[in-house]
Amino acid sequence: MGAGTFAGLAACRLPGGPGTGEPRAADRKEDDDMAERGRLNARPGDHRVAMTATPGLQTLGLGGARDGLVYVPRVRQEGEPSALVVALHGAGGDARGGLAPLMAQADETGLLLLAPESRGRTWDGVLGGFGPDVEFVDRALTQVFERHAVDPDRVLVAGFSDGASYALSLGITNGDLFKAVIAFSPGFAAPGRSRGSPGLFISHGTADPVLPIDRTSRRLVPRLRGEGHEVRFEEFEGGHVVPAEISRAAVSWALG
Image (cartoon, rainbow, N blue to C red; front, side, top):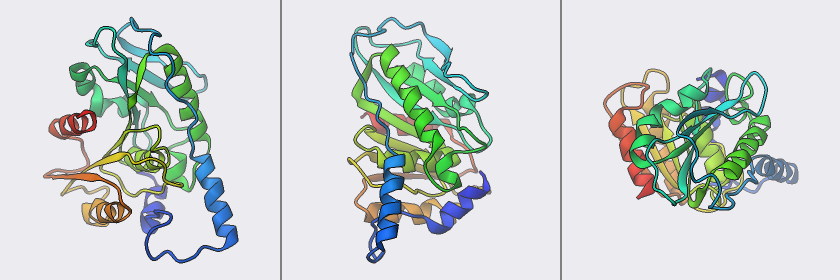
């Protein structure tokens, strides 16, 4: 989960929300800088590329001790560009952890999955602000868009735990790229300037001992709705996990 989770949760920062007051000039500049640091520039390109990509796990191959994985599903619609999900792992996790909640859905629905790894023990936005992880995710997306045919209307971001908090933060900041955000058991959301209007799917276990639901999603969801976001919220009996039925419901909703 990471210490940054609780720092972010205490703030539960959603810039521009009701009752925030008029920010000082220095604060406005800091918010502008933060918003720009959270921006992703990569966009889907030619739909004709790599329509016959080999199914299975592939190393991202961008170098370094922490890299990432791409999963090409076994079942794909011939001649059609794929839906893409950027899948973000929890604190202390890796690319396989990011993929785990969505692997079954990838093969059932033909999802292309990209699972980048955070530069540190968790995502920069969880530790206090956008930084090197945004740059790395942007590089990873650029590579995937160059090698795979991706439908620009079906690009999603998802995550679990710290990855869910980061998915919300990054997804709302880049709502002109991501159609939807799937957040499994998030702690908070700290986006930059909102762009676009991505739909939000949030799930949380009522017996979560790591990120208790009363301190997280039950506070976060009303605030997001108050900011004008469309949110589907699913509570389930259970702990800090992603049940298969929740994953299935999230993907079905996002692609529906």
